[in-house]
Length: 347
Image (cartoon, rainbow, N blue to C red):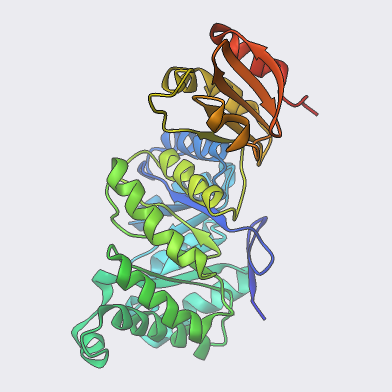
């Protein structure tokens, strides 16, 4: 039976939606900038935010951010168990650590004991840079399997301490390594929630495509309870991309969905000119509502009959259709106003 964990008001795991998360790209010592970015992320639908906590002098800043944040935070800790303890004392409901670099077993046990006492969730995991030569040799040179071994070692450290509020994570910038590692880990630890992502995926179109390709393969296998799209761009872009991936896979709906034809010489409506004018309309659409923009009547009500509302070019201008049936004929210049007339009423 799949386990669930709670991070503040957020449930992850069995029965919960696939959660969308991101990471602050502002520095912790700039509280105002952090809060501004957190508010932007909340408005995009982000549900969990990781924050770098690199030095103990920032503990008060982290405490203040936890007190004011509109979203639950996960402190990102590396190498220093004292920072893990400080993050929990500062009110973080979750931390991300590598149990293997927390020092002695006694220091790791102290971190786990405090997490248990404060009901803090621990995300553990490795990326491709965490794999050592011993793990690689044990895996026979298979980097995906070596990554799974690295995470498995971390898991066993926590399980030996009878700690179970864990999120598992294994990420690589290589898609095949990520897939292989997660498949192997799911076989062994599949009852725990998994965090998925493709690290260092880049920026712009290439970064979006790489993340979409990797994440869709994992999610299609049922691997992933929380996800991050890692882009070298503002974090709001990461969240928008994550929801686009989830919408495309029919795993989660947030906001409306636009479908449009690629156009051809048969078009009677300039689709590329209409789409930018639809931004305010798209923001008003209910979750899961589909709006279609098609160049001609061939691609209109027929191919887009699944759309709740759509427009298609016609010899006399354009037709407005709902659920595949034409409900109005308009001139090309009146398309936006006509669509607005047929939008669902706000509840």
